[in-house]
Amino acid sequence: MNGQQDGIAGDLYLDRYRFGNQNSQFLFGGTPIAATIPSERSNLKWENTATIELGVDYGLFDNKITGSINAFQKNSTDLLSDAPVADGSNFTNRVLQNVGDLQVNGIEFTVNADLIKNEDIDWNINFNATYLDREIKKLALDQDITTGGIAGGTGNFIQLFSEGFAPNSFYVYKQLYDTAGNPIEGAYADLNGDDIINSDDRYLKENPQADLALGFQSSFNYKNFDLAFNLRAQIGNYAYNNVNSANAQYDLLQDNAVLGNLPTSVLNTNFQRTSDVILSDLYLENASFLRMDNITLGYTFNRPIKKFASNSIRLWAGMQNVFVLTNYTGLDPEVFGGIDNNIYPRPRTFLIGANIKF
Image (cartoon, rainbow, N blue to C red):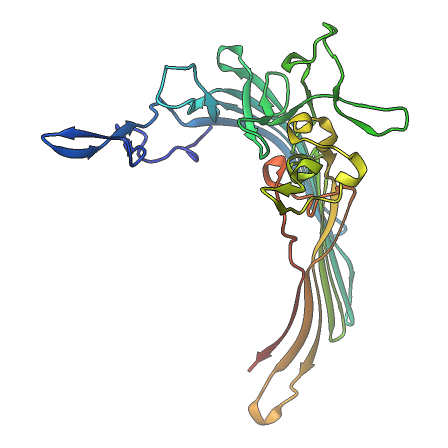
């Protein structure tokens, strides 16, 4: 059992005050004094995580193939979250709190293999896979907790902590479409059948965490040549495209008589107003991907400069962020937290170098 204190500021045990608006002042003995505001108060404790794990390590064919298989369960209690509080009960409307319990069940598999190993060729590969199932088991007062603030409008949240679901599951309206398959602006399904479209018709759909994470590494040497690369994949993760939901509306084409830039997805939806569409599940996309993080090719010259007693010189060239395969329409499917406001692409980097051994 381990304690987890990340997220708890070191000064939360103190009575803290902050200055308010610079115009909020009062006179004391004829001197203007700036007003201060109490900061939030919360009684906190560390998160606790208890883990049980069963595993097998294996080695086959004189350990040419090695690896492990592990199954585990993690039960976390007193989870920390910035959760809402009742009006008037504190000095802000959201406070860091211990809110509930989370269970994570998982299976991990790894294999490392020397496929070829002789005088001229050395080829090694490594593969790993992790499956995770996350479920919130309990929340304080059995109440759902909104999270995942989004751009576009004021006070909108797109994610929810709810018992029986994964953390940060997306909380959306079900989009309706016309007979041609085009989304209808502001038209959502009446899920509870009361003939009224309101927050009671929002539902939980998917979450930002991948169900399955995969990794593959290869290292290949042929005589003086060497080639290495790394692949990663995530399957089952979803992302909310906040760039499109907050900006792909024609009403934003002109702001205060100044032309603005709109995402090209507005050409597919023809939506007019952000407030009509901001919470639609239309913007929730499967962000599964396969990515090659890096690849390196090198050649080693043995004792090329006898005058300087050089043992070897290795010349190499490499690339980072080589490619990504995905159906996600945003700039990058790897979105931390699941809410995508990214407007800058990840750079592709080309590298060359030399390693000299004396």
